[in-house]
Amino acid sequence: MAERTFWTELWNAKWALLNGIAITTELSAYVVVASTILGLLGGLVLVYGWRPAALLVRLYVDVMRGIPVLVLILFWYYGLALFKINIPAFWAGVIALAGFATAHMSEIVRGAIQSVPAGQSEAAKAIGLRFWQRLRYVILPQATRRVLPPWVNTAVEMVKATTLLSIIGVVELLLATQQTIARNYMVIQFYLAATLLYFVLNFAISRLGALLERRFAYMRY
Amino acid sequence: MQNHMKPNATSAATGAMPLLRAVDVHKSYDRLEVLKGISMDVEQGEVLALIGASGSGKTTFLRCINLLEEFQQGEIDLDGEPIGYRMTGGRRRKIPEAALSAQRARIGMVFQSFNLFPHMTAEQNVMLGLTKVRGKPAAEARDIARHWLERVGLAERRGHYPFQLSGGQQQRVAIARAVAMEPRLVLFDEVTSALDPELVAEVLGVMQDLARSGMTMIVVSHEMLFVREVASRVVFMDGGHVVAQGPPQELFRDPESERLRSFLGRFHGVFS
Ligand SMILES: Nc1ncnc2c1ncn2[C@@H]1O[C@H](COP(=O)(O)OP(=O)(O)OP(=O)(O)O)[C@@H](O)[C@H]1O
Ligand SMILES: [Mg+2]
Image (tube, rainbow over all chains, first blue to last red; front, top):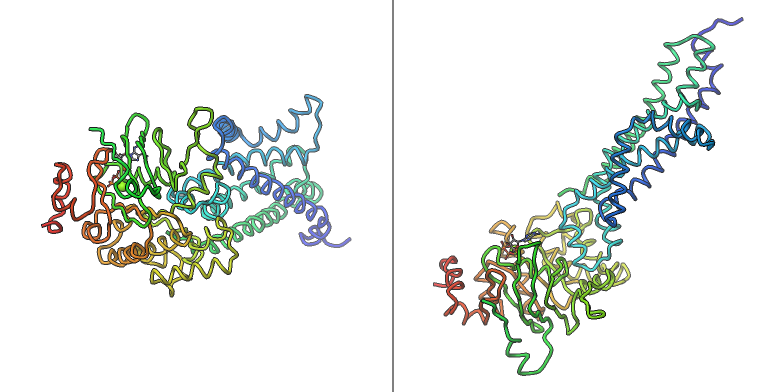
């Protein structure tokens, strides 16, 4: 039997780990995309919405931000099961994390829109642009630049939060790593490897954010 | 001291409709009544200067004309059509957003703080309304934008972003953006007061050029030399009322109103 090194064990576990990476990436992508879209809507309602709707979103944002993510995850997985509603752990996780991230994204979008000076929308009104045109051509392009840094922040937080889904049995990168370690007992090496992979994923998101920020850099006042 | 102005002499004589007519406009912010019954006519091609002490309601009145503020009572007509509100079933209602925007597009506005769109070049700033509101094809809109940027002396700067332009240049782009829409009327609210003194003249020069070309303008300004030279009529506001009005020569030479006299007294040298 060949000598057991980290590299041979890594080779043996490659499919399990790659699968873990794929699940983590997939989870993160669903969560970030869903919360970005819903957060945009939430932010718009907070700023421009009909009063009762805005209050409802406000309530949602404040409640969500006050609940630990783990509690949300357990609620969507076990809580619904109590009512005989069974959803797969993967989707329970996506809903829990996206629901949480939506609250943050809504707040980020609201702040970004409100940070665009009032004179901008007045100038847009003065040339006769309608509400959606003002939003599309004047307000949102300027808000986008202000959204980017906190958006990157939240996206990175969400990638990290996917590790919590190991608790409800989603075999994402962390659980895949733990299962591998259970077979080969190379605790330090494999946790380090997983750490490195998370870092690479998040670094990529940060770079993307920085790239976009530079692309918007001409938008100075 | 309610002071309802009669529609002014020229339109009464000719029977022609004024371009803009405000009748008894009242505007309050919560409890604070800021406009207490403003009435005035603006004729086609006229340059009307609006003067008055700080807080007298000049900005508020301009913003009402361009529907940036709601007003609670009175009527403002543009070409005989009421602006912003319509009577339906005996009640005064705000018109829908689309109609509101269409009315705004017929009135240009230039702001004290320029308010250029920072993510667009000078040319794109001027083009936006032409393409999105007037529905012009991009090529035609670009030609119009270039024409107006040249007219305000910025042909070479059309590709510059606002942050690459001086205050005076930014304000000239803002003027080009407003007039390129071919509005019936352009409102100027203290457009030179955020500028360094040496940049004021270039902006006033552009405005004088527009005035000469027959553009109808309402100008709020503390530049009394400019007002005296360019305005066809001066309206003096005080405490939310129109207190005096008339051609600048008459009004400045022999102000009947005590308020106006003390207001003008601040501009040493100009009226000596
Ligand atoms: N958004 C607002 N909310 C409450 N009060 C306001 C608001 N805007 C203006 N006012 C008040 O309305 C009055 C008229 O203001 P306005 O800006 O029209 O004066 P102005 O004649 O343009 O003065 P200035 O020469 O300083 O520009 C002032 O007393 C001002 O404090
Ligand atoms: Mg003012």
